[in-house]
Length: 285
Image 1: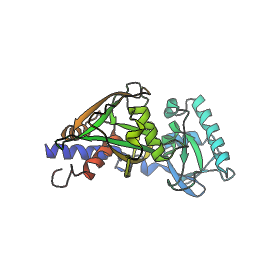
Image 2 (image 1 turned 60 degrees about the vertical axis):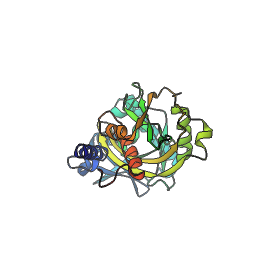
Image 3 (image 1 turned 90 degrees about the vertical axis):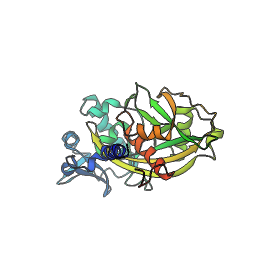
Image 4 (image 1 turned 135 degrees about the vertical axis):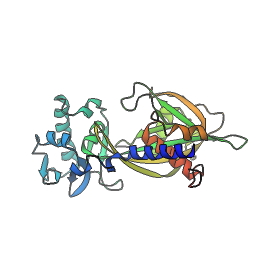
């Protein structure tokens, strides 16, 4: 069992970091720069489309640069939005079919000022880092047994439909801090009362990963939170994004995260929880 689980974890980690594995498109990608800062990666499927907009995207030998005449947040955001709307109308990129009408801030690092805003569905086409907030919700029974709440995504979700997920999680929109986002998602996705969240939610770090698929390059940064909940708490979904919730023992959780029906980036959030709380050690595996 230990060898099988360890191999499953290796497979999970390979999946969420496939961009850095042999055989990926990384060696053929061009850098994407704005204001002399790298903000993403451009694969050839995107590059072939960007060449049609030379007034916005300047191609050099190993990179694309957002044109220097676009020198403010507003002008960059407007120019990029115009290109994306045109590409969407022409159905140029598959990922734009999942248009969200939700903006993400584009930064060279989280603590740096935003350079422009971009439609969420387009971020993977440009290899731009997306940020999210994820919750590990758990209970400790009277006998000391730990259990974790696991959600199951709605089958109508645009991404990873029907897969297992954290109790609450969400992408970091342009107008929210990580903690504000986490509190919002706790209410919307699991109906956790604010009195169980505010002052009790623990920020425990962040993880990052980069994978690619047919939609593009997904560069992700996840802010992680732990929340111990009363044993009497029962989550409910209010935004139709979750289909069901399960309260699993730690052995059940460990078994679940190595399977293909667990959303991969949520799986590594759970793995981080298991390591931090001593449920996975070098000896246990």
